[in-house]
Length: 202
Image (cartoon, rainbow, N blue to C red; front, side):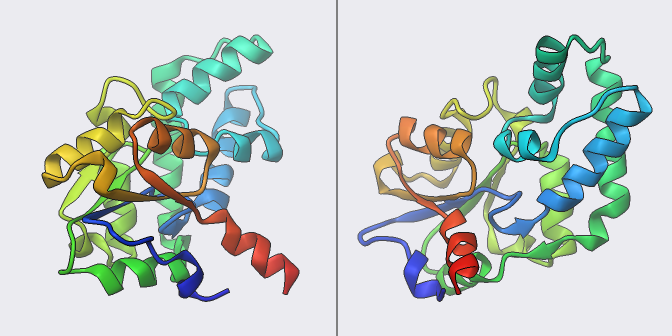
């Protein structure tokens, strides 16, 4: 599949990108961090379950695991432990080339932001490792808003900070919660999982 297949539909005045799984191929690294952290606390997370939670903030995932499986995980301690383990592995992260190509092509032409279910600091660290930080004028993390995805808050805040109306933004996402959030924000959205589906076909 080429970048032509995921080019933003005209007209658009700004682009907003999710980070994990969209700009950065972080999900395998996050899964390693999650499993090692949870097992240290006597819990576990199946891989297919993990991928269904793509875009959900870390603290919400811990709460969901406690509710669903009866774990007694301390949210703050588990959160900090998982994020620490991710940072230790961050050098393994690679960019999603087709999506990054879209960002590079539009750099300097329209405002661009990253709106993620990850924390602001972790998003900054990920973009820094990939040398992508300078492409984006605005970064919004889960800790910058009251309600994370699938609520539209992060996308609406990104649009506000860029000074662009929501309906003039195109969002790149890889998870159902993020896609729902973008749609609820009144934005057009491109599901980059089509890249994986096309790769499997070829």
